[in-house]
Image (cartoon, rainbow, N blue to C red; front, side, top):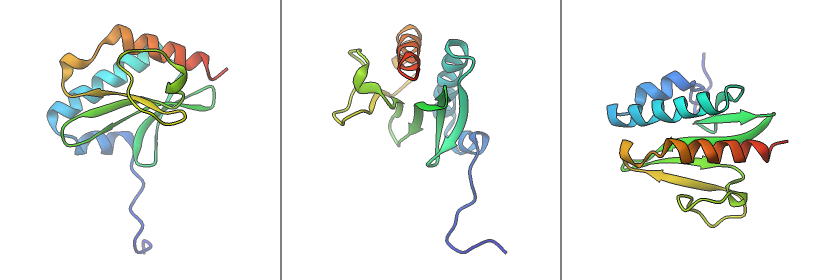
Length: 119
Protein backbone atom coordinates (compact mmCIF):
# COMPACT_ATOMS: atom_id res chain seq x y z
CA UNK A 1 0.00 0.00 0.00
CA UNK A 2 1.45 3.44 -0.96
CA UNK A 3 2.39 5.80 1.83
CA UNK A 4 -0.16 8.48 2.57
CA UNK A 5 0.68 12.02 1.48
CA UNK A 6 3.44 11.00 -0.91
CA UNK A 7 2.79 11.64 -4.60
CA UNK A 8 4.21 9.14 -7.06
CA UNK A 9 7.47 10.18 -8.68
CA UNK A 10 6.95 11.86 -12.04
CA UNK A 11 8.96 11.22 -15.15
CA UNK A 12 9.47 13.51 -18.14
CA UNK A 13 6.71 11.88 -20.18
CA UNK A 14 4.13 12.20 -17.41
CA UNK A 15 4.98 15.90 -17.02
CA UNK A 16 4.64 16.43 -20.78
CA UNK A 17 1.26 14.65 -20.83
CA UNK A 18 -0.05 17.09 -18.19
CA UNK A 19 0.80 20.16 -20.28
CA UNK A 20 -1.63 22.01 -22.51
CA UNK A 21 -0.93 21.51 -26.24
CA UNK A 22 0.73 24.93 -26.68
CA UNK A 23 2.90 24.32 -23.59
CA UNK A 24 3.84 20.84 -24.86
CA UNK A 25 4.99 22.39 -28.15
CA UNK A 26 7.22 24.82 -26.25
CA UNK A 27 8.58 21.97 -24.09
CA UNK A 28 9.41 19.89 -27.15
CA UNK A 29 11.24 22.86 -28.69
CA UNK A 30 13.24 23.35 -25.46
CA UNK A 31 14.11 19.64 -25.46
CA UNK A 32 15.15 19.77 -29.10
CA UNK A 33 17.44 22.75 -28.52
CA UNK A 34 19.13 21.04 -25.56
CA UNK A 35 19.54 17.74 -27.41
CA UNK A 36 21.07 19.32 -30.52
CA UNK A 37 23.28 21.74 -28.54
CA UNK A 38 24.44 19.35 -25.78
CA UNK A 39 23.75 15.76 -26.84
CA UNK A 40 25.50 14.48 -23.67
CA UNK A 41 23.19 16.39 -21.32
CA UNK A 42 21.03 14.08 -19.22
CA UNK A 43 17.33 14.87 -19.06
CA UNK A 44 15.75 14.09 -15.72
CA UNK A 45 13.10 15.21 -13.25
CA UNK A 46 14.10 16.91 -10.02
CA UNK A 47 11.81 18.75 -7.66
CA UNK A 48 8.94 17.92 -10.03
CA UNK A 49 10.49 19.80 -12.96
CA UNK A 50 12.21 18.75 -16.17
CA UNK A 51 15.92 19.42 -15.80
CA UNK A 52 19.18 18.80 -17.58
CA UNK A 53 22.38 17.67 -15.92
CA UNK A 54 25.77 18.09 -17.59
CA UNK A 55 29.12 16.82 -16.29
CA UNK A 56 27.23 15.64 -13.21
CA UNK A 57 25.99 19.15 -12.36
CA UNK A 58 22.56 20.76 -12.62
CA UNK A 59 22.59 22.81 -15.80
CA UNK A 60 19.13 23.96 -16.86
CA UNK A 61 15.43 23.48 -16.29
CA UNK A 62 12.13 24.35 -17.77
CA UNK A 63 8.83 24.61 -16.03
CA UNK A 64 5.41 25.91 -16.85
CA UNK A 65 3.10 28.44 -15.28
CA UNK A 66 -0.40 29.44 -16.29
CA UNK A 67 0.73 32.15 -18.74
CA UNK A 68 4.40 31.38 -19.49
CA UNK A 69 7.28 28.94 -19.32
CA UNK A 70 10.69 29.48 -17.76
CA UNK A 71 13.83 28.16 -19.41
CA UNK A 72 16.35 28.54 -16.62
CA UNK A 73 20.01 28.13 -15.81
CA UNK A 74 21.45 27.16 -12.44
CA UNK A 75 24.54 29.32 -12.97
CA UNK A 76 22.66 31.92 -14.98
CA UNK A 77 24.09 34.84 -12.98
CA UNK A 78 27.41 34.02 -14.66
CA UNK A 79 25.85 34.20 -18.14
CA UNK A 80 25.32 37.27 -20.24
CA UNK A 81 22.10 37.79 -22.21
CA UNK A 82 19.46 40.47 -22.48
CA UNK A 83 16.87 37.68 -22.26
CA UNK A 84 17.84 36.51 -18.77
CA UNK A 85 15.75 37.56 -15.78
CA UNK A 86 16.27 37.10 -12.06
CA UNK A 87 18.10 38.69 -9.17
CA UNK A 88 19.21 35.80 -6.95
CA UNK A 89 22.79 34.71 -6.30
CA UNK A 90 22.90 32.15 -9.10
CA UNK A 91 19.68 31.34 -10.93
CA UNK A 92 18.47 33.13 -14.05
CA UNK A 93 15.69 32.29 -16.50
CA UNK A 94 14.17 33.33 -19.79
CA UNK A 95 10.41 33.87 -19.77
CA UNK A 96 8.66 32.35 -22.80
CA UNK A 97 5.01 33.15 -23.48
CA UNK A 98 4.77 31.62 -26.97
CA UNK A 99 6.85 29.84 -29.63
CA UNK A 100 7.81 33.20 -31.15
CA UNK A 101 9.70 34.04 -27.92
CA UNK A 102 12.11 31.13 -28.47
CA UNK A 103 15.41 32.28 -29.93
CA UNK A 104 17.08 28.97 -30.84
CA UNK A 105 20.48 30.53 -31.48
CA UNK A 106 20.51 32.48 -28.21
CA UNK A 107 19.25 29.52 -26.16
CA UNK A 108 21.96 27.32 -27.73
CA UNK A 109 24.61 29.93 -26.95
CA UNK A 110 23.43 30.15 -23.34
CA UNK A 111 23.47 26.35 -23.03
CA UNK A 112 27.00 26.10 -24.42
CA UNK A 113 28.23 28.82 -22.07
CA UNK A 114 26.43 27.26 -19.09
CA UNK A 115 28.00 23.89 -19.95
CA UNK A 116 31.48 25.47 -19.87
CA UNK A 117 30.79 26.52 -16.27
CA UNK A 118 30.33 22.86 -15.22
CA UNK A 119 33.92 21.85 -16.00
